[in-house]
Length: 338
Ligand SMILES: Nc1ncnc2c1ncn2[C@@H]1O[C@H](COP(=O)(O)OP(=O)(O)OP(=O)(O)O)[C@@H](O)[C@H]1O
Ligand SMILES: [Mg+2]
Image 1 (cartoon, rainbow, N blue to C red):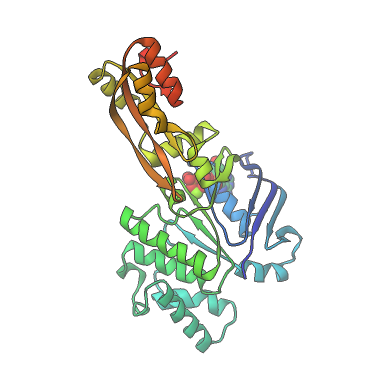
Image 2: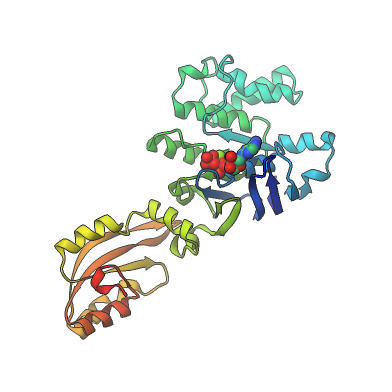
């Protein structure tokens, strides 16, 4: 059992006139992992709070599992809220309760009897890898363990949707990896639909099926993760993608490379399905152009190659033009810039 989430032309305006969410339409398929990225203030947290009913839209509708939250009375909203778990950057655990007590809390709130709640809580702690830690207090745990408690507490009532607000932003890279692996299990083994917001493209690359990019309350890009990484259509998206791929030289590096390499520097994107470097040796031979590989890297996004390499090309201007054109390269040195 799993549920999807849909937003239809959702607006959220706060008193004072801030349009935190400004006409967002999104569809998250049941069982998917959907990422939302954006800079600080883009409206990401507000968007999540609209999905779990903590905020009401100024206009537009939010549907969870096909039901429009605005049309439900408090009595029918309650079970839907229980279908939606949420985790946070700062974990938001009860410091005065033990780990077990934290996980029991939503179960007792939902009216589950003591024995059933206890067995459910222990089962859930086991799932997140914290069996045996139930008697500890949050401050006796590492950040990664605390987030596991947060996940266990969110999952205790067996929600169909899990909302994650910067859930790994307070963690170091290795712990982030462990928590992301746990979230993947939550999705695959429990079938929970995940909507996660982050400013780290690496999180999107690791976990998400689809991603939306938000800016000033609007969605400026929305697509399948590989497509968005390979062919970002909006400058904000390009900047986020560059932060995760590290293979395209930035301006400062380009200047240093230019000082060392007097030939023409060109950047060749490596994208699945594009010819890229396949024809390189033939092109070089045909035009009598020599090259040095000066920078770059090819990695993997969702099992498909993605990256870029920067080449220094040496030969007559016309020959270098022809090779660069043949590679579909973007000219990066001053000599090559228009
Ligand atoms: N309760 C509120 N009252 C008034 N303005 C708010 C409220 N909550 C958020 N805002 C404003 O709405 C805009 C979007 O805020 P939001 O918290 O959704 O951004 P965000 O993308 O989550 O940012 P961050 O990455 O910093 O968490 C901001 O300008 C913020 O100041
Ligand atoms: Mg936020």
